[in-house]
Length: 378
Image (tube, rainbow, N blue to C red; front, top):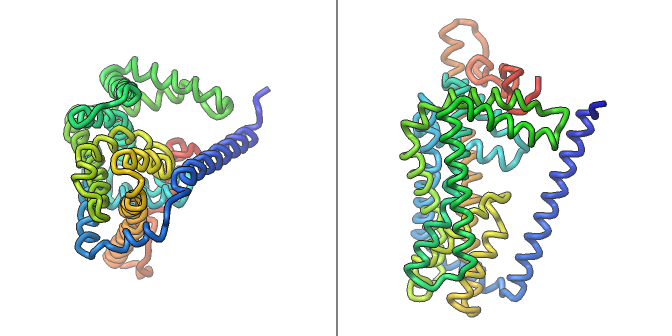
């Protein structure tokens, strides 16, 4: 007899919470072990040396980073201009950080509806963007390895890690290309994924439904992928490089010069470890510990406080500041749609009060087709 779906979902939530707690504890253990001897008064002293000019330069780098991050969805989704893509991406980043999934997808849905963008094409573009990002994320270590080979001796474990990561990137792209080119492959991939998912949620996952969804996805994104993927991939890799550039500028701002830590080593180490950003909060703690270890090995323990200060600045700029940008972006979207609602109501002459109305920006679930909601709810 089939198990209780609610009990199965409850067990799944418990497992996810336990895994997250375990990951947080592991991160704390790693960070405390590495930073236990750090003088944090010296860290703060290094951070406080930042000038307003340096802060503005860091924010300029962030602006380029966030824009390049939004370029792929503007290419993949017909009718989505780059300014709106930035608005959509920034708002979704905020919501995905403070709310559980699929809250970010529900917000994207409302935005697509308000902008008269086909929702199926919108979600297809977002999915394609996610797949491409994972491919670039796992390809980054190969570029990092090339930089390190130019500048220094490289240990065999770094070569092995970069090679395995590159194979994962190739597998991701090969699967995507096969799915787009052949309907039969798309159906097989979806069915296989459904069978794997069925092992974890036997009452909620139907392999044939998954197969049909992947075939639909193929039809939605095939044309966009063939036409725009080189530019999207270039922009995505550029975003990764600018992320590393924020770290490099942070290091220079706290006094770690090129003579101590050359840019080629900063970018090389950053790219080799970049797959760690697939962990929650962009690998916060784990990725930082790796970068700190690599930095200390090069510049010595006497610069440990400066390294921590640079990592702190980098994280504030690339993780915390985008949350504030997301608040502003979401507020601008709400305001613009409220203003449009007032105009439409005035034209209709219905005398209704100007607010954030359903006709312009529906609630995330109010008009969502029951069979295609991201969470599968009716």
